[in-house]
Length: 152
Image 1: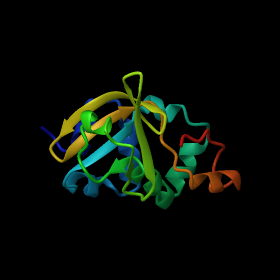
Image 2 (image 1 turned 90 degrees about the vertical axis):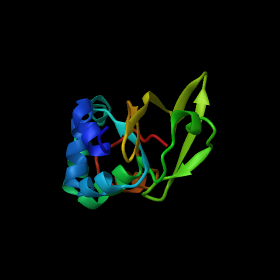
Image 3 (image 1 turned 45 degrees about the vertical axis):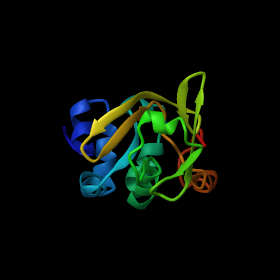
């Protein structure tokens, strides 16, 4: 079994996420993390962002780091444990709302399209939409980033 980073690379659906992790200098931290839960947006999820949005984040590594760490919980949570949770703090510091709807696990209203992808240092849950923290709405509203359909 591989660590989180190698698991993302080997899967093939997360090339944009892997590039963003590298750009934000989170690579080493994710390889060494003890146990984490990563809600991993697929390449398709990143392609749904409005034009210019990823350019903004890639040109602003501190903002990119906040965006990416908003997708990480500092404990290993299997899908069965997510179902029991109401909300969990992210490494970034904001809370994610986790619930089930008709048997489907949702994170801030986003579907987990594949749960429980195991790695030596955590678990990955693939999602089909990039999670955007609420606090980033101010930057977006002020024109510092492209218009984004925010997912809370």
